[in-house]
Image (tube, rainbow, N blue to C red; front, side, top):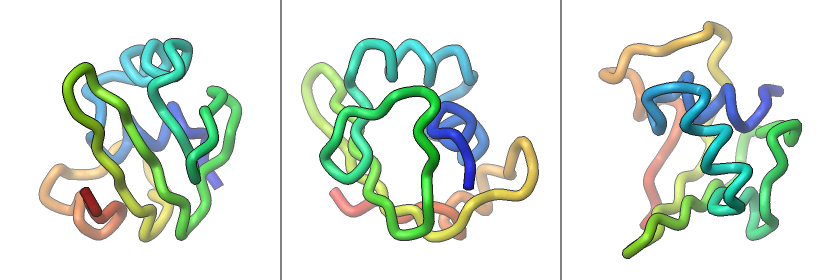
Length: 83
């Protein structure tokens, strides 16, 4: 289990954790179609939706990283973009 803000940062969806926290506080991050709170934990199989200004992206969580950051080259092991 990992907090959503840490997860977005550690799998390189956001560059910094503070960016992830801003996105969460602006209610543009959803987990399984529910607006996420920063304290919400991500679990394997969860669907994360990020609503950008002109589009949205969905990712399926494949596994939870055990380290603070993962190499961008290994991103596919942790998340799968589904839209």
